[in-house]
Length: 165
Image (cartoon, rainbow, N blue to C red; front, side, top):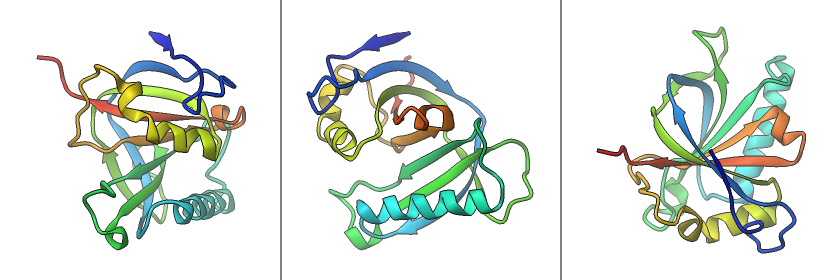
């Protein structure tokens, strides 16, 4: 189910943020990790990762890239913050990258414009956007970049939710 929110997170109403609830199950990524301050450096890291994937002919119209900030910058020294970028893969691919699973579970998925302004506003307003959802703070928020959405200048943020008892 998709629930439109009021306008973009920046309040410009350029594109509505939408939310849906989705189950993640058996997702595997081929990834690389960067340690250091979040921000512009992660953008460069992501661009370098995509270039690597293009060189290895691993990107196509069905590709999905994930960005995963593993640490809370309010609680971790900026030089120790970990950020993974990965490509969703099937089976055991013959690829020279580390492989890992994404935690199974229920996620609230927010779609928004892939602009620096909207992404910054999303992070600034995340508490308001998740509202009464029961967020699982033991799992990281996942940035998801499906090729078809990136082509439309959109991205998704996947917020892990606690299991309902």
